[in-house]
Image 1 (cartoon, rainbow, N blue to C red):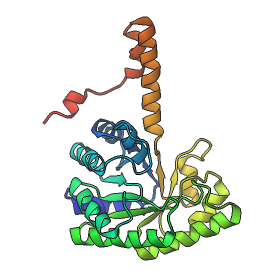
Image 2 (cartoon, one colour; image 1 turned 90 degrees about the vertical axis):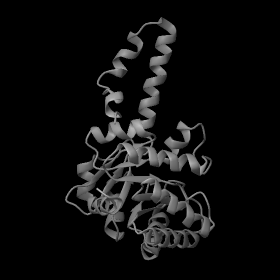
Image 3 (cartoon, helix red, strand yellow; image 1 turned 45 degrees about the vertical axis):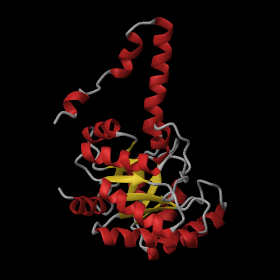
Image 4 (cartoon, rainbow, N blue to C red; image 1 turned 120 degrees about the vertical axis):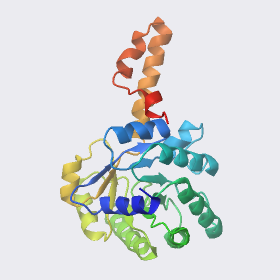
Length: 269
């Protein structure tokens, strides 16, 4: 399947009968395992990619490492790949357009694109620049505009709701295909956001969040795992290594390694 077809397939997944349950990878191996587990698409996590390369989250990882990671993921999976690119790593619209062109060349058919603490008007201009760059590349890139009002505590209560809905409409007009609102986990609030936002709503997996079936009933179209897979994998690794250092026995790794496929076979050409 060519990249344009994958982009169209990815967009369709946001409008189908079922919510898109999307896992977030950080390298080729994690992405392959996610696809083989049944994922209909694979996303990267900006934080997990940064951590995997020894950088903190927050526009610190070099963009070449982001692009290389996306290319490596796209090479080993057949499903659509969407990349979490924070705020595009620049506020310069020309540089942003060049980055998006390279990201598409790497194999991405979608992006998570966050406003953070930026002026929403600036972010709307950036969404427009991304759309224009994707159009020039000839790929209908799915722009998932992330609104950080709740995640970063930029407002509270009714003010947070109103600001989120207002930003969602601004980004929709600028060319976004979906809206990502990380932070909320209350069913009533999520339902009201889904009703008010006129694009597919993406929610982030959090402890205490309702399961996917309930979120689907509330109108959510996409659920992202964010850093949860990375945290689970590395927490398991940390515990296993501590046990190994204490005992020097293979049993320290046995339980955590059960069920891992033969990646040498998986990646053989």
